[in-house]
Image 1 (spheres, rainbow, N blue to C red):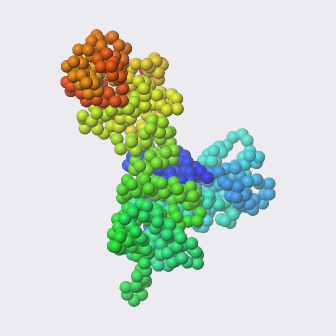
Image 2: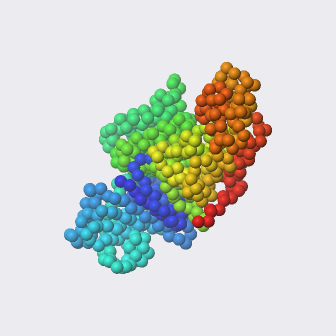
Image 3: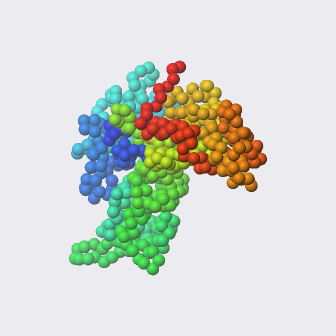
Length: 608
């Protein structure tokens, strides 16, 4: 089941756009201060009850502070949730609506939509305003009611439907049957059920230091939203209670999986200690064995504690959950990050969990593939959430991952691996160039992409997606072989530059460099080879492109075939730094790098 969520007037989001969350591993990336964590808290508020079951967490004001801190003053937050229900859930909703309305002609809905609003102050929480049942044969049906978690909030007064509610549901007044309003005072009947996946939610943050002990030793069958009762939960599982007869098996699975993240840990335990004074309760401590050494989990590092919380949140529930994780990579080694991505994928497929991970990690972003989203700041200062699945697919067609791109200040697209080696070496000669990713499109003289995809479309998709996450990209391509229509298509966006010479080999026709490289592949000396190379290359303009000139020189001088992948990097290294033609290439590259950095504005698109 895919959940489609959108929200507005919350944090930096005036209107977030729709976010499609699928069971498994979903990653939200983006620049700092663009709303990643705010989005997690908004999703957390969509749980079945607006307040967490752990009263200590609520009494401490944590939920109130987090949610109200992102609310815009004077504006009402709205949340829209849409999902396609399963057969069993559709029948439950039909029965609830029929009971509330007294109508027996309702058929199971094909699509459910919920519009909710957030109210601050004493009415903290999400108030479910309406649920729309879309049916193929009957007019849309609205069920108006209150959130079961907030009995003090009254249902909407009267049977009249507010225009803003109709608009939010896509039911602006117009021709056709009006939605049939159903009003019921009983909360359990007025509010057909939320998707099972939202019955429980956890939000796990990476900025938490683990406590040495947890004083709550009561039986804990569920994890608190912030994992504050982790020790009690693990102690309950380890002891195997009546409510969790599979507790020990779950504990063993958590412990076993923890060792795949941290092989140095040989065992984990939840141990109850004696009360320290009269009236005090016993404490539960978590310890880990590292060979012959036993260490409290509080001394094992924050990454170990956070990983244990994630494993417990994922493996403990018997049904699907919405699990929100903020910056899980913050305290993890890259190898542990890769293991985390594999685990979330695996357990998501097994249990149906929806994991929403806010992260800057290029490893997690690369692993997310089509479930990669980015928070993007718009010109008016507000933010939206854009899907970057097309970005990941375009990169995949090029044989690279988001991890190859995201750590850099910009992207330089070149035609193939040989060009990449040349431009990478030249870019590395300046501090600014070292921070630019050089990505080959793949080619044999002219850029070609696997699967016979149109190169123009691939370049545009990569560039458009890169710009969405404020990562500028420019393509530097050979000028030979391209048709006028191809050049026009690539140049009109102002992000493609063609070399002034036909191809990159034209900048490396230095006889001394060619003779030196050819001497390494033959039994002749550079002094013997140089005259033959000069004669073979001939005067300027003899050959249409440089690769033909080099190939002719290699065959004439030593009967050696020219292999671009093997020879071009060596020719580049052998070319003197003061070669005037090489200086021309460096100048062209410097102009492109300046454009990537924004020092030079992109060229305006040509007139149609």
